[in-house]
Length: 345
Image (cartoon, rainbow, N blue to C red):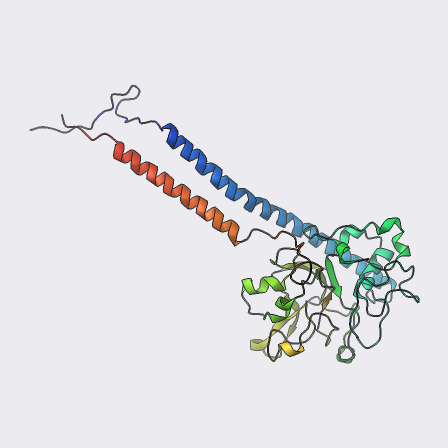
């Protein structure tokens, strides 16, 4: 009876091993796979790293703004920054009379100017203009034209501002409801955040909208992924939705958070949407409306900042990995087919 023993390689080296080296073509394929995968992964990692550091610096800016607001309030009987108010909460304005030497005198910013109110921090609290620019936005630091910031009254344009501030000029209804912009505000009342994106996306979303639907309602500073929000007690949080203000609703089943980028007590379209706008005064004591609206994005120029890694990045990465797996499997199958058969002796 014949016995069977495994085939032994005749190649030099350790006995019993079937040595087959990689061909030049196979090595080139492996190198190509590594290049493709690295090319797909690198933008993803770079984008995520940039966004992470940008969020931290952005949050630091807002904390400094919050500290400036608190110091201003200490010097002004507890009241937050505000310039000329028409007394009834008329249409808010922005960027008026930038070169005026006195924000409260004739010839200064117009009534209800939100950016002039925020600019008071530059005039009085030793903050630099860099603090008012999110590092992940296309806005740029303002050098005040070489002038002393204590001799000007406002930002000249949205080119130098990438944060929004609570509209400090409430409606009469809000005043009657108890609206006060001072130390009495609670820790869930938003007073500043990454700049309001504006546009129909802000007013059409609801608290239960999907992440994709919520993106146009989030700031452009972070690619629609969310916004850093400064609250009245000075703490800052990154929120993935603009519904991050005070709690509304009377029953647990109908409760939701106030949209910090709209004025009005409702949300969404239809019956609720009839009372919701982007530019206006607070409607009641819980209504936090942050202005101005950004000059870039859906309602402005096309100079929007690059967002974090998107689905396209993941698609490229997935395709590269799948290609690599297919080639490796095909190579292994090919080498198996070429392996010499076992011989009987």
